[in-house]
Image 1 (cartoon, rainbow, N blue to C red):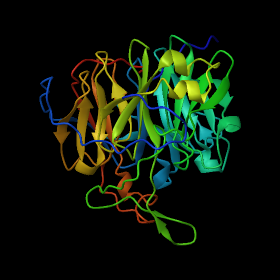
Image 2: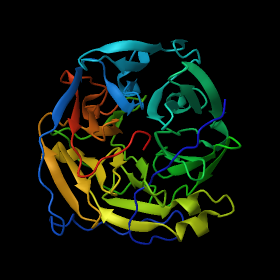
Image 3: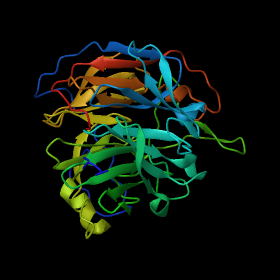
Image 4: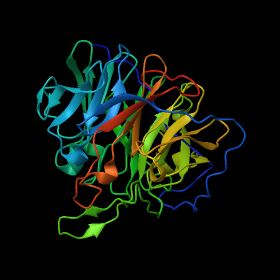
Length: 377
């Protein structure tokens, strides 16, 4: 079967040069100005008991979820039913519809042809990282691309974006923080490259934050506690395939790099670093989504809020609610609307010092964006 071309995305800001160098402290987020943005009321799309990870929606409207490994779920993938208030079985660990021995999946995206691109992160080194392509219409595995040759011992291949014009996939890997990087996969050859490891735009900024009064805290195997800082996480590409946008979770800056440069295997890290721009200020955030007009949607984790960076490079809050507990991921629906996934990760055992005290159910919302988006972006 011919593998369809795919697209990519990364958010960007003002020029940053040099690998491994820490950027200057970000300025406060500017007050809303320029474009007028109206606040919205997110509409319920699903309320589920199982902990979601990322969501993707296929061209024919199927809603496929990864189930977040931070809660140690039995299932790896699930599918929302038509009512959106229950989860049907899609894949158990190592069995079910996907006979591939999946270990831990977070990043999942459907392309414009309905092929699911599934990132198995191997549960932080317990198994090799892989990118699997699953045809959701023919219900069969299309391809497996091994990523172990370009990942580190603490890699956490997290999210991905498609560059349909250049037939590349771009993957964010926050890894352990200082070694955060992007992975570029040439889909014609299946060959992955690790780029910009340790660059200032990849690594977390030296800050902490709290969500609902809970500061994300990890209990180490020896029982001591640490406050993790997470590097490059959200990644996306504009619909013109010109810019890839990305940002660290622990960070207040959105960055971008030309897609043509990122796809050019002849460019080393120094040459790539010279092409990175500082694009806009932002709050601590997880995943992102970009509409056809170039507006970038993201969560504001400390404030239980949803916001947007408009094309004038200004951040605007769209909604704030107690139900927006850790806005994690986004998915475009066939009608151009945007689904918003909340995961309560600050209440998961992994980020809550071993305690699991989520407040069910987990909620997925639907919003009407400033401009429509498209499945596969």
